[in-house]
Image 1: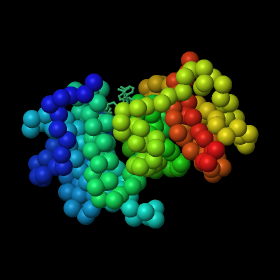
Image 2: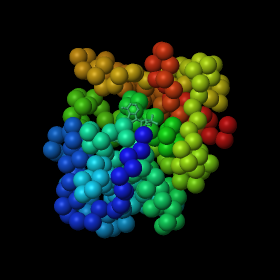
Image 3: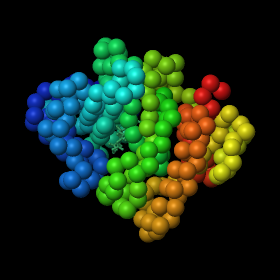
Image 4: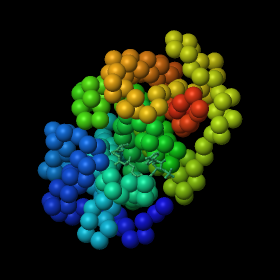
Length: 262
Ligand SMILES: CC(C)(COP(=O)(O)OP(=O)(O)OC[C@H]1O[C@@H](n2cnc3c(N)ncnc32)[C@H](O)[C@@H]1OP(=O)(O)O)[C@@H](O)C(=O)NCCC(=O)NCCS
């Protein structure tokens, strides 16, 4: 449900960046060490990045922050942070912030936004792949090293989302049209087997439900699940697959991967 009184705009003052930093802390539940320092966000924004907030009156409910990205051979930004305060979540604000970011980029002839997220976070996977129409072609093992917070001792493995702003999938998503596999369609897809080259151009790659709580009492099982998943994902990406969607099945959630050009 959209919040009618919410307005998205770029941040204007150091005080607003400090508020954004606090919103990130509240959203992520991270230790202070991991909270983005306002001067870093101000510098990155000043240097061609962007930071926009969702405001209700003067209150900042959430924000998106990106740095310029120069190593992909095309105009791009890397969106480092997206956070919505816990008391303002599930109101569609993250989508509003990302769509603002898309318009900001298109107005500057930037056609690609990348960002990373934890592949075991179903909520983020749904937002990125289903609601926004991004695809994932890259796996980054233990990208940030140990981050603590909700991740405890788990390696900070990440998927890298590529948001191709003028692709048909993203154009549809920007209009609010999402396409998801039905449970029947998902059940018909082969589940990828570790160490085997997939014969099908479309496969399912399962991941654990209820992450990270499910591993709270058994970190070793969490690390093992991370390793298994990471090996399988890296092998599929090396074969030219991309994650294009995510499905929730009775057996647990799974990514839908397609061989590029399939
Ligand atoms: C992830 C986050 C930014 C989502 O913000 P939000 O404003 O609550 O999200 P929205 O209300 O815009 O929801 C957008 C979509 O995200 C997904 N989503 C968001 N919250 C969800 C939840 N609790 N459970 C399942 N899906 C969820 C859904 O696909 C939802 O679309 P839908 O409402 O049509 O089903 C917010 O929860 C947050 O700040 N989390 C901590 C930081 C973080 O994970 N950042 C994102 C890194 S990619």
